[in-house]
Amino acid sequence: MKKLIAGNWKMNGLASSLAEIEALKGITGEAACDIVVCPPLTLVEKAAERVGGSRIAIGAQDCHAQPSGAYTGDVSAEMLAEIGARFVILGHSERRSAYRETDAAVAAKAIAVHQAGLTSIICVGETRAERDEGRAIEVVCAQLEASIPNTATSSNTVIAYEPVWAIGTGLVPTLEQIEEMHSSIRQALEKRLGENGLGVRILYGGSVKASNAKAIFGVSNVDGALVGGASLKASEFAGIITAAA
Image (cartoon, rainbow, N blue to C red):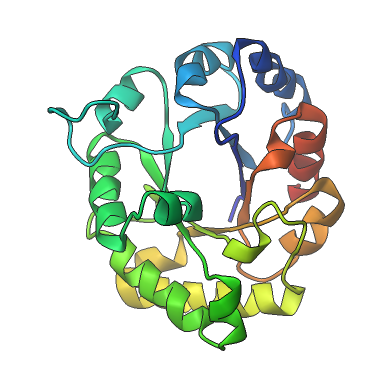
């Protein structure tokens, strides 16, 4: 399975930051993996224009579940598709905690993304307390079951496992913990989606850097990475892309 390396810029980047995405074009020409960068909404259309004809896809960081309506400040999946987005991150832990997004809300957004012809990157993950209580796998698999809609297939859905306690902290689970979780996610995907569950890519996220990416990518059922801060600079992101090859 070809690995997918996705960069989540979060609320970072102005027009001048597009140079970092453009710099990737020269670095990733021979990359043996799929690459997507998800900048803030203000840069999606310009970024898509800049990477046209290259191996790099552009994604967004969220969308509304409805195609249109009186939802001030929101954006629909159709709107994102129109400006060049091909992927949409959904259910990131920061959205789940700060905006109280539920699994049901994530599933509804995923349906909208699929109907717009885009690919959803559905995020799941446990807190430090949930892991310490021995409930990490239970929590993540429950999130997975409730966040994946019936429209999900191996071609329009990606799962990103991000232990909440590892995001932006520099902390990383052991390789054994990552393997255990990704194996459990694979089993849950097979149970939920049947044969399609075998082809869904499962990304690892949480303090992924060029220095630890190769070891993480060697773990069974790790099909790529969802990268936060390390995706903001082409030089660092390129090291992760190279590790995936």
